[in-house]
Picture 1 (tube, rainbow, N blue to C red):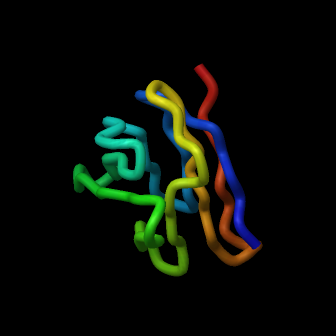
Picture 2: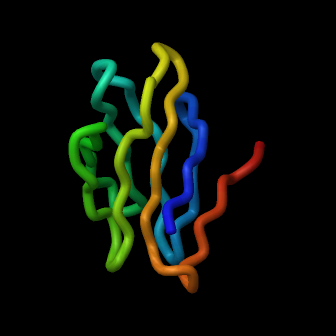
Length: 85
């Protein structure tokens, strides 16, 4: 089952033993994340991108210019939590 989270620049999400942060919103249909390993990951509304074993991320519909929705697809036993300031 997919989880959708509204994100703004700099927001961090913990995914199991990894984390990803929203680095930039590149276009209406793509964004760049940075992972805990320092890897830049491009995600889009067209395809899902694997960011960890069994964890896929894509963009949800209608991303705004300063905020967007990330769609996470992972098994239920993998914890996905947003960090709060």
